[in-house]
Image (cartoon, rainbow, N blue to C red; front, side):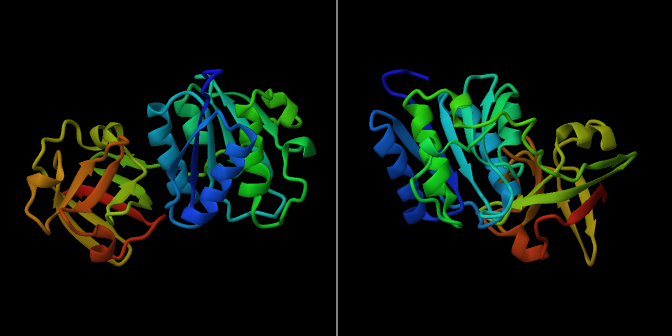
Length: 269
């Protein structure tokens, strides 16, 4: 990180006002820092969605302190943590799997410490707003030059994100919906490698059949949305390198009634 202008990002499911409060806490401790609110619009409580956003976005941001807060377990025994990465970033947030995919994309976890030291918290810590009282102060002090080890005791390893593994067979691929993006497109827990393992080289335009508990659909495998007519469905590889089911200028989630965590199986039509 630049000693003159350290960089921080903030990603939450809080909405603007609560996220702005957290950013303000960081600025108050490190007024020389550049703090970017990457997103305050993660779907509330959706840890996987937040984790995938961090994994996709952080490699394109400057090396810095990155705060991620999607924390339905706030106030429970889950622990706040700071995670150092091989690239040189420090990720701050709840130890609930949220930070791990991004840490792996940034060169892996090199150290982790729990946020225990009261010197780097607010004087009074609420039971429900650890973003303001624990995570933002820790990030601010890191930006101000406090070493990660000063924040608290070493953690054995951050808790992993529990994602269902895709199931590959000859001619079929089963993957779960990881999350639904803001357009209603369904991002799946599989990528091009699993698609090739199931089908070999799959030309664009190949018609696919998708089935799930209580439903089915047909859609071509295409390179981009504009390859199908407005209102038509497609399977594509999104910008994070994962397969997805979308409707051109529409919502696949609304059309098919699929939700996060639901598995669907893809075969040739």
